Image 1 (tube, one colour):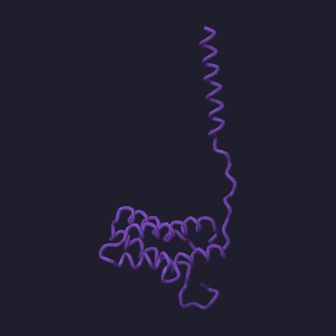
Image 2 (cartoon, one colour; image 1 turned 180 degrees about the vertical axis):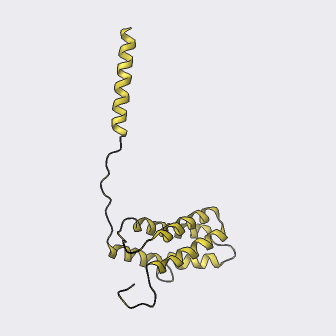
Image 3 (tube, helix red, strand yellow; image 1 turned 90 degrees about the horizontal axis):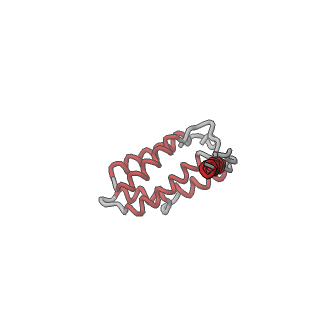
Length: 140
């Protein structure tokens, strides 16, 4: 009988110890990005002939895109989406960008050209939700 009680006691102690180790502890706030850091990431992902945006546009115009390249470049948009979550954009919502970047990654993984084109178009159009092209400087 003592052995059974002892075994149950050890089992109970192990359960309590394990649950204490796996309990969710409050996470420290992740470092918030500055608008300057976001601007640099945006420029790297979207500006220039060799940017992921330009390469993705070129690949999706081909009859048979290089899906490895599209998948690789989609990661830049996913990283941008994650960055949007770490900055306070209280005046605009990046939801459409985030949604489109996720859809593009999925379409690239599935090698679905139609879905990739739709997602890329959505991603490109989402820029206008924050950037008013043609407006006075400082209002963009």
